[in-house]
Length: 138
Image 1 (cartoon, rainbow, N blue to C red):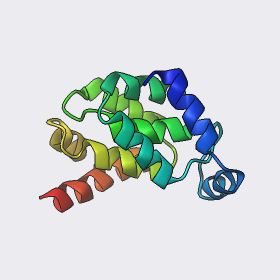
Image 2 (image 1 turned 180 degrees about the horizontal axis):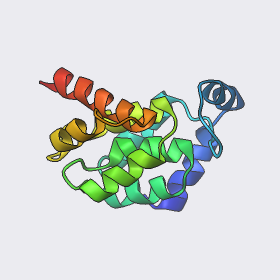
Image 3 (image 1 turned 90 degrees about the vertical axis):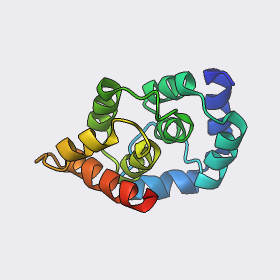
């Protein structure tokens, strides 16, 4: 699928109630308010598409960024890319789905060790969330 098609589908799936709920939990605009059930439908349709994931993340739309975590290829994620993405996250739900997505990446252990030592709230959360996901996977 093309970026424009995915963004249109996300917009169609969005609801006012979900936008309100996500904002109440700390999500910021822009967002469409797409349920995780609908995000999973798109994930199933797209499968893995790392280039599309990068494009979705660049939109800064919360729903697009969340979908990006679901379709990225963890084996293709670079340290530079991951550090940049973690620094851009300020919503706990997005951070947690990102850490779930990358817990099978070849670079996850070194990132986890660095991030858990961080004094920054969000980077520290990334490290601890990643640690939890690694423990669950093993």
